[in-house]
Image (cartoon, rainbow, N blue to C red; front, side, top):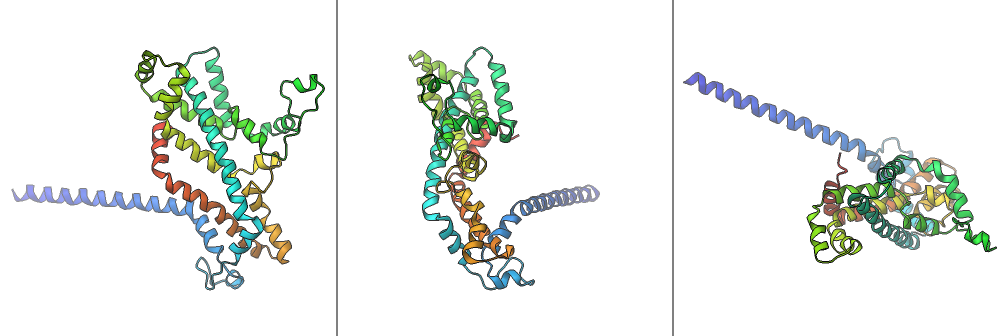
Length: 316
């Protein structure tokens, strides 16, 4: 009897030790991977508070001995942060709302309707996701340099307008479902709508609702988790985008990323700094100023964002 009890006790100890070891390894892996991902951001945040003496002191690594806010004051002033940030948020917010509406319509069509060449068009959608933007940069530039897609203005003898140096190319592309990452957003909505029961639409059809009314009043409210996910993704990618902003020569007054790209040169000319290690500190402050609005957005919408990612089928 004692031997059986002893074996049971030994078995419980071994099982507990294995569970504790696995838990320890799991936490070590999570902490290690998290540190690898977050450590560059920690370094940027810490160095943005460095003074000149901290920068040249080999004993200072992350915690400054004489912290200063001078980098942030200069970055805010040079970038016109107080004016540029609201314009940029309004710009990317408008694009995000348009993108969510348009991509949800297209995703609903792919998920619920049958039409000719549906498989081919969905294949083009997948290609649109993986195709690098640099491949189509020249056609896009030429298109909006003389914007006359159907040649109507040329037949009427009217000179096509030049839409470069304005945000109109981004609005037009987004409105027609070809904006930044629109292919991915369409795929997200398609996967979400495929997971909804068809009985919802059948009940609306029995009540006399048409296809558009069913989408707008029945399906779209149910797709709010995916819509929030798409809006967050769109705001983040549009906010950080510099490729299209430079391609279409959009004014830096409404694109904060272009302000950041020229911050070091502006600091060097304004303060007569020729040491790249010092001008980089101002750049770090500008990067942190650009990150803060995105962090606030994610913290506010974190629960809805995670719910939307789980229900849209893009986890794996």
